[in-house]
Image 1 (spheres, rainbow, N blue to C red):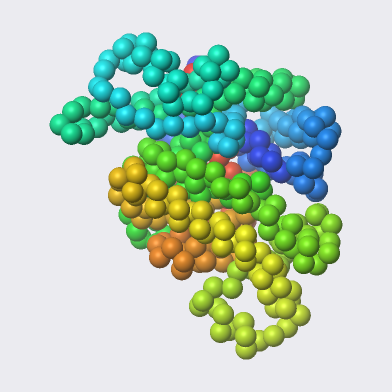
Image 2: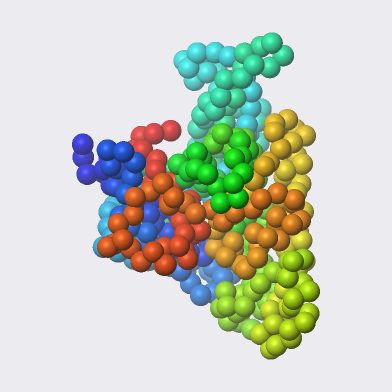
Length: 374
């Protein structure tokens, strides 16, 4: 067994931070050997000149893979799901060989671009029985050649070699499948869960049933929307507003609304101003989540979502889990990805790991991918 099969690096290139997780394969399970997160910039990368942005990302990737507990050239990375065309289709039951021959022709009707314009892959998710007919549930993924080219150039310029390129929403399911049999904090055993990854630029909703993804949707609300509202309200720079969000942002939930009104202080005043400023964005996010759930239940015709697991930097906003739980009427947990991973206390500061765990779900899911695995 070569070194790589035993040491897998998941590299999650976000829009504002880059995360890397390195795992060591044990006889049973995995051990965490590295978990690093580096901010790309204190300003929003969206407004940057493309060349400046590229250089910044290249340097940040170089920096993260030089960390002594990450060090390595071969990585598993992901394309953001908003850059991929993702379709779930059903086809009559057939052999693997027949499917391989048929899929490129069949895919054309689902993908709004010519097949010569995309990099394309598929995966059989499930065998199902429908209208007394055996069918296959197939996941199609297509990425524009240009998008894939930019991603590969970025990795090449940073001196890393991708062994597998996934889509970030699927790596979330991958990380979740490691914990799927675990008793949750809320005590709810859920067949159907929504994995909601709240990044800086957008929020990805992936609905998994028994750890198979059946719906992936991106919502154009992320941490930057909240930061920009705070920036406007307090007349600050982006980086000052980002810092204020991290220190003071809290969502007033029904169970705390009364308490807040009876104890005014300057910090409370700041928090309530922040809460008011971010409320419209928060409500838009809530409505988009609700719409995705409704669509899933009515169109995909599967069991309703029973539980939500939150990850991503924006899920650190105080009470965001309670807010979603109250409004959607279901248990919401913060998604701690390392439950079933061995962690040596000599190598890690557990407080740091717990405080930052929500950043690492995608990177962990990527690290769990085997070289050459679909």
